[in-house]
Length: 132
Image 1 (cartoon, rainbow, N blue to C red):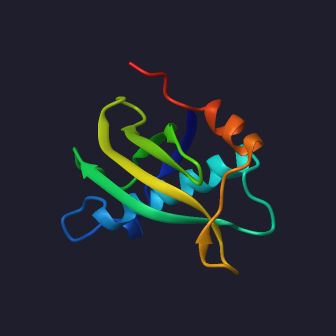
Image 2: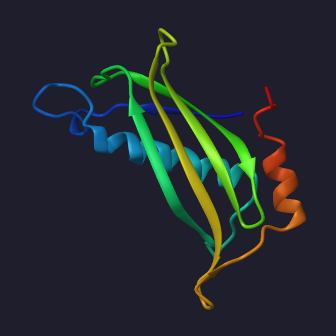
């Protein structure tokens, strides 16, 4: 599992004082990019697209809180992989949101999906959720 810590900034809150729901997608993106970089899945040529994303909001988050994002692979396909991201309030460990996404390796010249290499699949498997 990959971990990223996010510090909630004042500008990410709304008139109600809690983090606006749009920011959770930004937090997920930031964590995904760090995950890709750690696994060395990206180089100077970015070749992934976000095909699907979802987020369930479970608890309000406020300015100054730290959010721990745990990213893990739940499925690896031919040209895509599925991620789950749990967002926890770092101090209490409370689950505040849960996201999922589908990432596709993409050939921008051909405008088609592109198969993942065996090396990419091995890297992803190292962070894959064990079957229940």
